[in-house]
Length: 246
Image (cartoon, rainbow, N blue to C red; front, top):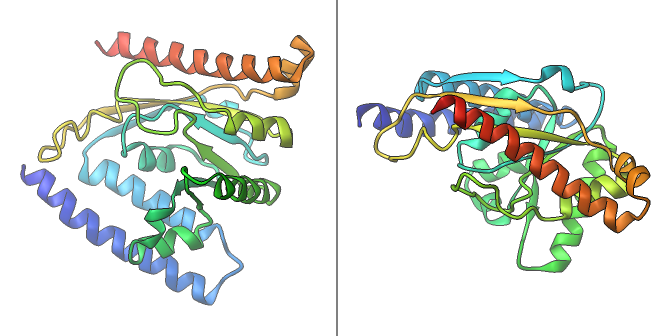
């Protein structure tokens, strides 16, 4: 209870302070669009270690080439996924986020200058604009992180994967980087009590659409097989971790 209180109070203060830092730096140095994400990484590491008391174990760094852009996809179990991902992955990536979050004082502006992309799920025209924005980010050597389930899935089995991330991979030729997140939902099972846990992040080998196309010949079939293949690999690794933990 006390730890949770400290987390919510100091977490809010830290978020405000770092958001303001990013805003001020952006005013005087608009060319450095990477700085807000660096701030986000610092914020995430402090939140995880100092306030949550959790240990982060990452496997698969050898599967990342820091000189390349990726379309990063992962399972999505908790809001905690956001700062776990930022702390664990040493890439300059951008998030897709609900448009409503950009209206939050300070934080919303911080997200905007960080290059995060607003999405309105209900309106198709906005979805198209979001895809255009994503392509621009990828062209500028930034990676994009997408939760293909579209929402948090608290169950052990992954939800249905939406096609957007994989269509992007097909259209741009940029590889998909699958990432598995384990135990992120355990920290705040009870919002009034923080549970220190070991969080596991497993980075898999990149997947290229062209490799599926060579194997299956037809673009539609290749896309479907890529979606199913990536989902199955994430599920398999996730299940292996859960079995070990139990």
